[in-house]
Length: 347
Image 1 (spheres, rainbow, N blue to C red):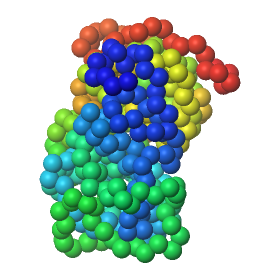
Image 2 (tube, helix red, strand yellow; image 1 turned 60 degrees about the horizontal axis):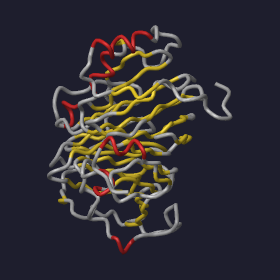
Image 3 (cartoon, rainbow, N blue to C red; image 1 turned 120 degrees about the vertical axis):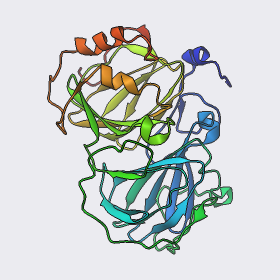
């Protein structure tokens, strides 16, 4: 069913383990998507322009130790890279860092970036907005396997459609990288840092704000204790993307329950009625939201904190609802109370 009407999406069951080719709700288990192998790296595309209405595209890059992507830039795309597994060295002009799971690097349009995998089975997410940065991946290179070929030649290829650069690859630095810049310059950010807001049994860490991405998107990491479903709701003007980093997250999506475990992805365009519950301790969820209009929600429903981990029971849950009632322009439409209890979880 093709639709651009947000309210019509209330009735759409999410597409499961396939890219839909239109902006409707869909879910991909880890490893699913369109796969391409180039330069010894396996690219698994989990979002294309046709799947997101042109808002963004995204892919996981999986590679062995020594595989690299040379310095390159894209003129029109804001990009963020998140290390999911393993370790990788990233370069921006004049600086470099060794990144581990939870660390990220954020690259404005036209800024060169390079990376090298430092351990086998290193997995990095590339998220770029607007969509189009991944359009150059050769369709003829589609592969069926879900892991890169053993013994593949590591070529160090610039992504198709990118502009190559040749600045020096400087030695890596050891800066803390724990604050967000004031503008759109490139930056590194370490896990569990950035701007943090406390929630009931959770803490939200901004990895990128709209001021860092030209308003194209923002990114937030949620670290949470087990908790039941929140109210059912939908958004009219922004898209949410959920990526499970650790633990277990149940998502209720237009009446369907979907379990997210590490590496799983769910895309919820405007009009998707949804809720979520956490059923494992120290669960982490990466939220990528396009555009940035929903960013104030986390500020007005939480409390500033300097802590890097959650404090169980930090604030009264009424603070969240009070923040929503006091701010009527957050693009949240309540669609009902929490869904019924999660099946087979005991909460």
